[in-house]
Amino acid sequence: MIEQESRRYMKRLFLVLFVFGWIACSHSQQKVVRLKGQLVNFEKVSIMENQDPQAILLKEGIEIHLDDSNHFELEIGLERPSYFRLGRNTLYLQPGYNMEIYLDYNSPVNAKFKGIGAEPNRYLKHKPFPKGGSFLEAGKIMKSNCSYEFVKKEIENRLLAYMDSLTMTPNLTENFIELEKTRNYLNAAISFNSYPAYLGFAGKFKDEDEYKAALDEVAKIVPADFHKYVGLAGVQSSYLQLEEFRTVVFKNLLHDDKLLFTNEIDDFVKTYMIINQLGSQGPVKEVLSEKVKVAQELKTDDYKSVLNQAFEKYNSLLPGQLAPDFQLTDLKGKRVSKTDFKGKILVVDIWATWCGPCKAESPYFEALAKEFANEELAFISVCIDSEDAVWRKYLEKHEKTSLQYMAERSEFQAYFMNGIPRFMVFDKKGKIIDAFAPRPSDERFRQVIQQVL
Image 1 (spheres, one colour):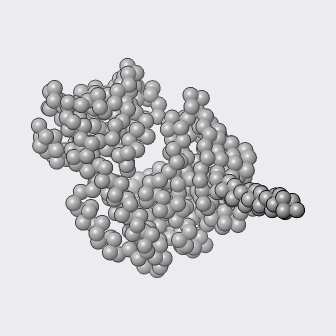
Image 2: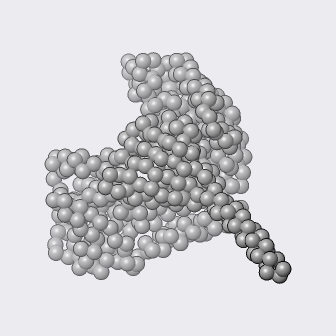
């Protein structure tokens, strides 16, 4: 009798433990996103950038490692629905999604999605680019007719088309629909605000006076349409995850006295500005002093914490720290690393053939490479173009004194590259002298080099 009771008890206990285990496992799986697929024309190590506002400030993302056929497979822990940016595509991921994707960096609209979560991402692949004037398509829609009446009608038609597409796309959550409606209104606002800039390229004016007269006339009517769609979009903290909202805020609304930002938006803006300054200049005395002021102005504990975390990341790039290594490829295809230059003062220029400011600084860098040419120094130029052939073709037409290398941008992830050109100087032991050196056209760059000779 006792033995039978004991068996029944053990069976009930096993059943309870099984159910709890199944629930726990199921709950854990719901907080996971599974992705696999192929990325074409991407770097072998690509970063999927989290568009959560705090993640943007901390430059957080997920590394995707591609195999020899550019395929990948990964699992992502995710607490809540979030937008991510991968190449030129925006992705929407939600706990429980299980997708197979195909992305071509050079052709975002040719993206393919299969599996759980495919529908919102198929919708997003047609999302316009704010930096290209959104619905203006970098002025493309103005080629046949650049009159304001025509362009206004085109903007409104495209807005309606996106709204209709949003309505007809199945399996979308209410949260996604709300955010995308907001994005559409903001794209319309950006389109109107971008019209004057593209008018100069698309318009056929007799002379400068006629062009200025057209701009004066447009300036009277564009603001009303811009503010109309900003008003329809609204201003909410949750919109910070939208690139379009951040674009409108920073380019147009920072000094608008009629708008009252929430504490979170206000803190995001202040934190973004100082972290952007940090990314450009590094943790120099002026930036550290400004950080103290900003910290005192922040109203939310979350952004105070983000500000401290962001600055702590840069401690590894202070002068005297051992510099993170990076891998390079020379013109003969030989692989070298930063450590191969140990024993020399290393002066680095990170650039790209598509970067105007980079090419403008190159003559100054090359002049210094000639001036300080000796066995103690190595001046190297590192191109981060995605195509090897473009780099080689450029060098055929431009004589260089500095050593020429190529690298993937991801090689410099530890250096928090906020943009290029970027100049760095390292001592003979591989330690940092200046990871945020001035541009060579600035006399202070020469001084950095002279101080370590």
